[in-house]
Length: 86
Image 1 (tube, rainbow, N blue to C red):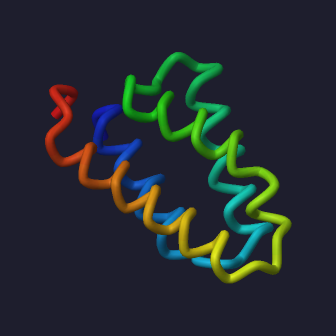
Image 2 (tube, rainbow, N blue to C red; image 1 turned 90 degrees about the horizontal axis):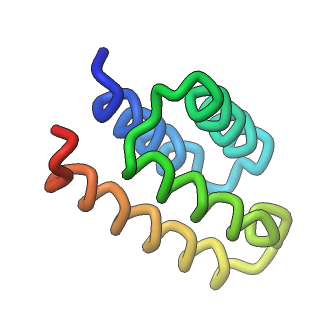
Image 3 (cartoon, one colour; image 1 turned 90 degrees about the vertical axis):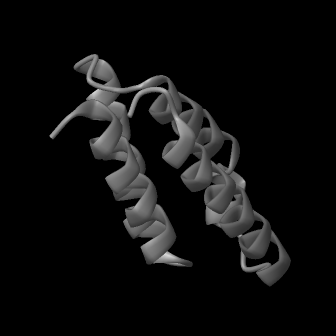
């Protein structure tokens, strides 16, 4: 699988897990491993930065924060579709 497709798969995993904090952390850990191995695209790096910034949202019970996280992840997923990495 090429790096852009692998990053897109991770994005889909993030969206699929919705409010499951431990599952989201597992996806972020997979992304960090890809980054260490230098198998991550610019899009993946952007998503990883987003996930790091959203760490407090993962621990939050606030529905509004989760909706914001989901909307931002959707924007990243759209960016994946138009990414030059594809």
